[in-house]
Image (cartoon, rainbow, N blue to C red; front, top):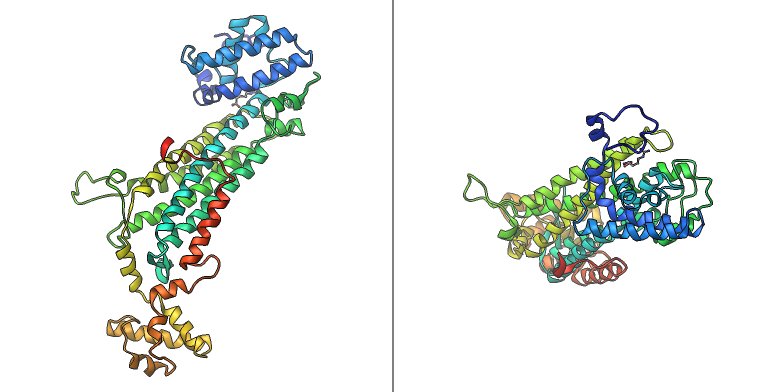
Length: 468
Ligand code: ARG
């Protein structure tokens, strides 16, 4: 096919160069965004008298037909086209002749592509937020069922202090809530239209940039034409928000993997969300959680790719920037895929409460509470801490736990101990004493759930059970 710039060139493009240069394989997903942008541009050109209003109307009408033809598979995207922008313009011109050729007046592919990516990504954000909202609502529901499910809380992966499974789940709810907020912040900066920046230096035509932006639902227009075409911060920002989100999902996956090992056995994944081994008949593997953890590397890689592509580019547009799309689209697709699989996996898992309780009973996770008991009896904390350290060492030697150690032994180490030490170190009492805001006590976790549910209301609704 003859190139648009055939007038300037004496030779046809080398076939390999054509493929190398082409982005149609990955930018065709923006065809609706490109058509929307062109309709807004043509409408504005007509209104401004830059092209004849009748021609503008004809262009808009035909672009609508092209969109339906693409939607319904009557028109196929030509894989040899350079990109989606060229393809649609060529198709329009094939259908409308000279009128079609007027669409690109006062526009460059540089501001066109900058606009299209924004339009495309801005549509993805509410979808991801919807999935996050589903996930967070699920966490709230599960947490509500487990406000009394005592488990060990860990630091350094060593049993540390007693918490509940509900409290543990609500920690993740906080992370995903922040992820939702970050995406809203990103959307705010993304929703500014670069259209009208031209190739780099704006245009001499009397454009009404605000009008075109308004037609597309943008909140405003970019304020410097060089920046308008060369900025990809919105891709990087989204990709970085998605990397943080995946980091959260990856930590959660890591815990799920640990929890379903024989060493922990805190949960059991549903058979439909686990896999077997090709050789070891006993195996039930948490592949999904592992893949989510693995795909986190990929999303972080996309972010690093974007930063690396952009870091050395002089102003304004450079073809390097065509590399933005595969990276940012891949992070969007990967995140959606992971969330869509992770949610039902979590929803269908079985919580093995007794095993959590049994693990909590070992490991001296009430030692801090035992020291606090002595503090209440008047000892300075450091002395109490030392006495309990000696008690723990004694228990380990005798193969006991604090709950079973006889009172004489307690009193031998510190005479302040009395019979009431036993209820004070009872695990349920230890948990429910931590009523502080953000703590693991049942009432505190219920308040957390309430708070998160209220916060979630501001974000787009997800598919919930039905639509996934
Ligand atoms: N396919 C190109 C991209 O994705 C569109 C912009 C091309 N602009 C140019 N001056 N060659 O970046």
